[in-house]
Length: 190
Image (cartoon, rainbow, N blue to C red):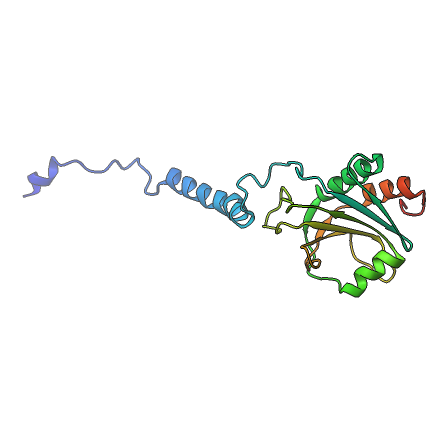
């Protein structure tokens, strides 16, 4: 009976007991799913990490400056300057802030502060987000509002009101500079 097993093939002892290559492939797949798959699913955009531009153009841009409202339409030189500045600020989005403003605070920003508001006729797709940020038809950029010590933020909103959880951006300096050019107030860019 010993001869019966003597001629059978035995596993090669030089072979590893563990499948390192298979383990690395499995870990790589898990890494890709966690790093790319989950944010892509949450944002509804498989290429969420590719920087792209906002394709929609607002039908109206309002600048609120110390109680005055100045409106710009497509074709105005100031319109292009303000839209480009807001889009540049939005391109630096780095998350959302868990807070919101009351209607009273928005009124205060419009009447006593400095802000920019973009109004669209169709929902805007904001690119590059790691989560679905909704499809707003209004964007509100508060620049100088008394009593707010918020980091740089951009509110998104629907037809009736602005939503909570505004987008946090790196800087609103491009918007402040554009508003400074439009209204001639050098204190905004500081």
